[in-house]
Length: 621
Image 1 (cartoon, helix red, strand yellow):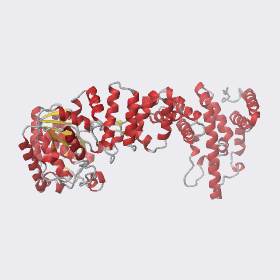
Image 2 (image 1 turned 90 degrees about the vertical axis):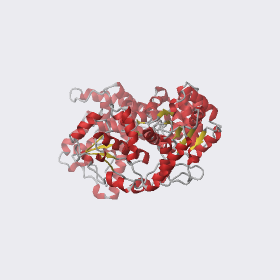
Image 3 (image 1 turned 45 degrees about the vertical axis):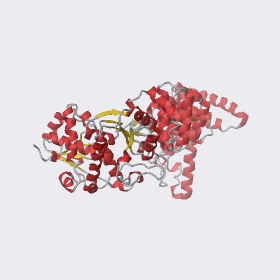
Image 4 (image 1 turned 180 degrees about the vertical axis):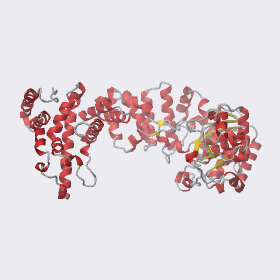
């Protein structure tokens, strides 16, 4: 057997995920014929710093929560185990992750690659090994369960494991119901903001209550939200419904001691109820018993019915209630509930967790279905909140993708284009999706409704600028952002011709010609011209400010350029004169402006006649 290639366990999150990775790595090494081919790396720094992940963090006096945590390897494993299996680091460039992209569909394929030294090391993460390798059997599940005994814990944790085993043995036959809360529910993490991400990793309280009451025989509730679970057991008020804390001899267990006690106790259950959290998965790997997902016990209609019945009677924390309300919302949608109810649930959830943009996003979704005026008014308030769009567009390439993508069509219906704030949101969504045509259409609508709104105005200008940058047209409108170190933009310094092309008249003329070639160009032309004038005004102001600060930056006279005489011809071209005629018309104020524009169109016809046949750019109008 090859001994220069190793299997590496590496996770940097909580102890549950790390032990799943370590257990799986040891199991695979055993199947390869030598358990010592397994190694693990260990990083614990984050758990010694962050509040909610500190090894000793357990919520507050009002709400006891056993936080996800870890510690130094010496405080978890025996010295002998560390000497056998720990490595400080490995060459990641010469390794292959067995979970990402599933490079091997079967264990046999992996075994061949391992024995042929395809890589120096193979890394295993958190994925369910029976989903990674399709040829593993029920017998392999038994082997995985037995492999847990190969992990040697330090003396203090070994005592905790022994206590859990004894308590579970004394209890006899029982079911364990794991109720995860933690970072999916409470405000110390952003997970709760990310739409459906990890929502079914946790279990809402009403579901836990009804599963427990529905089970026959002894059932033990286990979870990280100690305060809420104690209340659920009290409200259930049934002799067969028990609480894990009552089996612990020491009520001051550390987080890691609580974690290991819970894992070992649950692993001895006849049936295990829970979700796909790492804690439950690890207990199931060790116990190899029947597993039932909490969300499969009742139908959506049944869940919605007992949520309506039990929500008010469970007087839990605001975070727990807000989480239950979110389930109430999605279940109400699933069973075809009334929009008024959905709006009511969303508003109540906002009252409980006002810092969570998720509920505000859903409230807008529901209001759009019922009252567009109210939706638009509410959107105006939410647009002032910095994390609204940060949350709406949150994404992870390797985990959950774009969290709110399923909701985007609700916000980009054409009907919202009649409302300024909703149009702005629609435009931002289309921009995020890189749909320029729809981005611009909604941006124009929001600007038309509220032309004095600086946010809408700036957004429209930025949309136009971005498009022109991509097309490299309108004479490099990207010039709007001057150099930050008081340097004069290089386009001003090249030639006299470039200088003249930067005159407002030439820019406007060029834009009119470019946008006269399609119907869509005509529609957007007023906004493009307005954008160019505003950008040009800012460029001039920026230039004058730089020169005032540093007179050496003043541009040389146009006459000093070697191409000056040739460049003067640019002022006589159709493009320049067309823009100049528009400037003249725009300069007229009051009632005379309409006559100025009539004169402008006459001037255009005159210019066309004069330049037709001489210039190729005279296709305007």
